Image 1 (tube, rainbow, N blue to C red):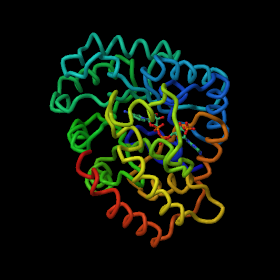
Image 2: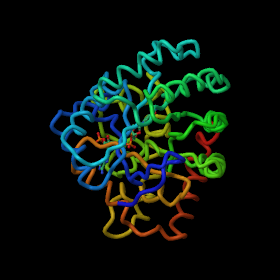
Image 3: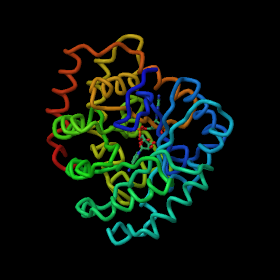
Length: 327
Ligand SMILES: NC(=O)c1ccc[n+]([C@@H]2O[C@H](COP(=O)([O-])OP(=O)(O)OC[C@H]3O[C@@H](n4cnc5c(N)ncnc54)[C@H](OP(=O)(O)O)[C@@H]3O)[C@@H](O)[C@H]2O)c1
């Protein structure tokens, strides 16, 4: 495992970290035992940073992480999120009272006195020009409820606005072989401002593991079934918003680029780590074996220039025309 500085926080976090959405909910059934085994495997592998949210399984993901922390002596940094418990995303919902109540619930779930990193959870675009919201977050830092804060964004333009606020430490954004615009438009500015970048949905919801087929099915409580066309939340969060069949064809092109001895998941994660603006990627995993596979990406040698060019070409020809400018 390798560690990179998380913005200006002073923390160094594992470049392959852990996304704890799937162990919470919305990805089909995951037992507590499997979820705990996945978390322990992550820590055994040198992961020291976990990303969760209050809404993942209604607090289940946070509570599982609290259990993990209780039984491990290693330092584990936990990023959580707030805002998605609003019935409708409106700026008006981001009141001091709501924020305090969401933070207090996360403190309870995580069994801690202060949240390491609180991220606004894909708030509406018109929240970003509202300094009073960020001023409230400053107050929570001063009060000792949160150590640092950041944002999780849908769109690059939101990220660019967010990093105008001097105490925004991190931006979580979708970045993978099928979602490359952040590297062009956002990374140079984030790097200059020493913003920590958390690359989420790195496996395009599992597509970039190479395991899916045209006839793969997903259970009714898995967002790859119920949100495939954006019925519940932003369509970009499911399969990166790429049409499933187009993506399967692109996956076959990527398969040819995977070095001998590596899995496609490792390749997809190593591709992300080729960008030094990225602090870490946070692949989700439901089982210990998936974690074991994913963490090995950290030890793959850098991908050859020709391989990076081939992924770039594939993106430009097959994926970019479908949605490059949307996010
Ligand atoms: N709005 C937000 O802020 C937001 C939105 C999305 C995600 N996130 C964060 O980002 C994290 C990562 O994104 P994600 O979980 O949506 O997607 P992802 O990391 O691209 O995909 C994760 C899924 O891929 C499958 N998988 C993982 N490793 C595998 C392996 N080695 N071999 C085979 N299958 C494997 C697992 O599902 P199956 O086994 O069922 O296929 C796993 O749940 C989340 O956990 C969450 O922390 C945040």
